[in-house]
Image (cartoon, rainbow, N blue to C red; front, side, top):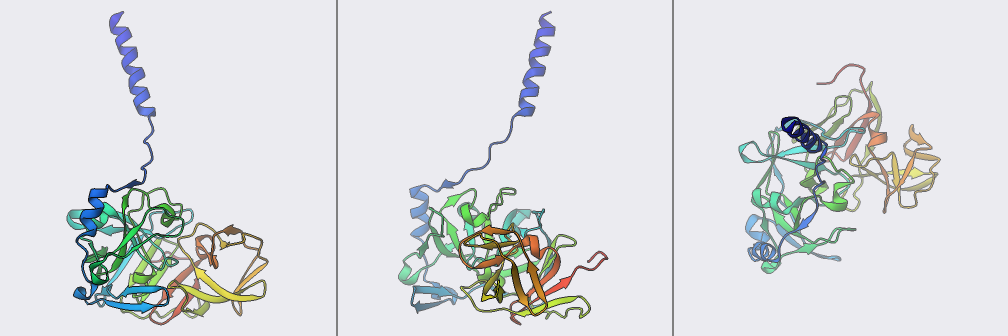
Length: 320
């Protein structure tokens, strides 16, 4: 009888253990001691060949992010339904960290512990760290330089990133992506240095190239649009219900179209023969954006060096 009772209790405990859910990871600010240890080691950016510029909005540090020529990589997108460009950033000894390629973010961001493992160094004019807080985020970040970032076999040397003084989920920068937990965001300040950023939604890959100019198949091209300089992000010009304006290209967004008002849109037009009727509209502050739920219907190739973006029909065959 005792053996039977022990067996039943053991079975119940095993069932309870199997039903136990893993608690979601939480954002944890780094301790004051860790912050101060990091911020005390700030370096003058000119040591690394970066420039310091006085702008109407204050001092800006620019430069970095050198690419190696003739490099290319096809990376699987780790978030689907819809596919969004979360890919693995590679570290030493086979370590991988999920990061978001965000064309609608002007700056890059990295979790504190991940940044330290990548060798981040704080930079600032007169060795004073440059701190900033992203919209909607309560946790400050420190402008820093990473010796090298590796996306597959594509290397970015000395990019500038903001190191968030916390570990765990990235807050608003994560764009509501919960799984996998993002360790960083690669923004337009880095992506705009590439020759090609291609979203091959038919196979769930993003292709990055450093020097090869893109030559689209004329039979597949739906639209070829010029990029415009706007707020340091990927943008084009278009019209919304007849009103001309800037429209952000936002493959990281889980929506068709987003606008600050969230009201209905009867017609969004990007080119003479390229328009969307009555798209679903989500609410996001700022300019109108086109997100993954519309972009996924095409093969989208952004060519920052040529200041162009191509929309092509998806071939009926598998793409390599």
